[in-house]
Image 1 (cartoon, rainbow, N blue to C red):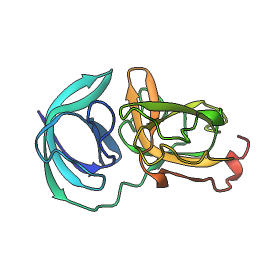
Image 2: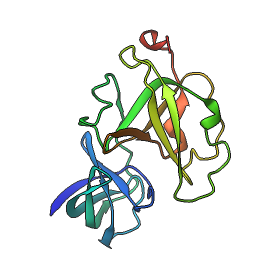
Image 3: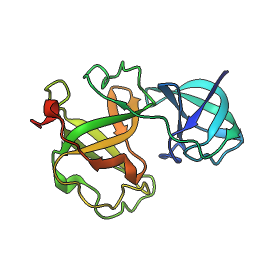
Image 4: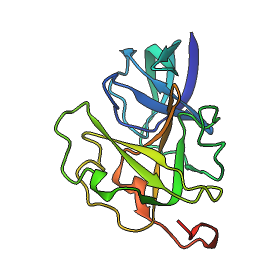
Length: 193
């Protein structure tokens, strides 16, 4: 059994009723909250005790018990990715809020302008950027029912924030709220997207 204290950074996500909890710059996925507070909300500070387990190749806390410490906390400040090492299966930022800056869509038709119909479905949107002068692509998972599901296609360069999720060999960013997407600001180092 392991106990961590942190801020819930997501609403319930995916078919496993998972939540992401961040403590410092590290984070973890919490699945199967079986006792205590079971309906977690972003911004809650919780203490969660669970078993370290593996789900789809990712370490998670399962069979968890959560206790509320406080509510309405600001979400942790996201880490701006600056290297490809941070976007890898060995990243220390797994489960943490991160931002990809100055990215653009590889194929704008992939963006979910109409809400996804199945509540457990996700759509993968590929973006390209200028991380260490490499173009990506980077996988963005937009879940049905998230605030980004059924929104206008971003045009040009934009910034996207979410939780860095690593499942097996897959690295992806999962944004949850509408403010996770915003227009990119000019940055001389990152203009050649």
